[in-house]
Length: 120
Image (cartoon, rainbow, N blue to C red):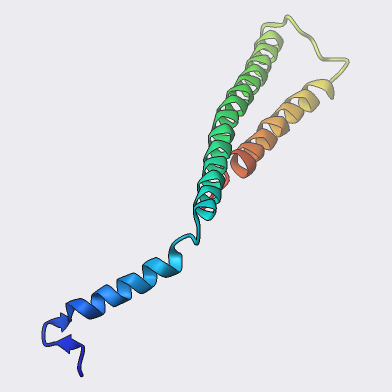
């Protein structure tokens, strides 16, 4: 007997296929359902905490980067205005500027790699 009519599968074959899928994916007992629900809640709570922490970390990193940039601006202005003089320590200013630049780049790598991880 052909289960398909000219317009497609008949109602009984669709019911059987749905029943087979539902019974395969359904939890076996109430305890299984409770465990699945509990694990999903734990997963959602963990993700929520991660997003809250990510916001906090991002705030502090932005604050630190802003401080570094303001510090660099202050040193540049002070040297340009003649307030600071690095004639005897010519190596100091490039080292401080280079170190600050590397900190900013490093924090950018941390932000991209660890705070904004591509999740499934």
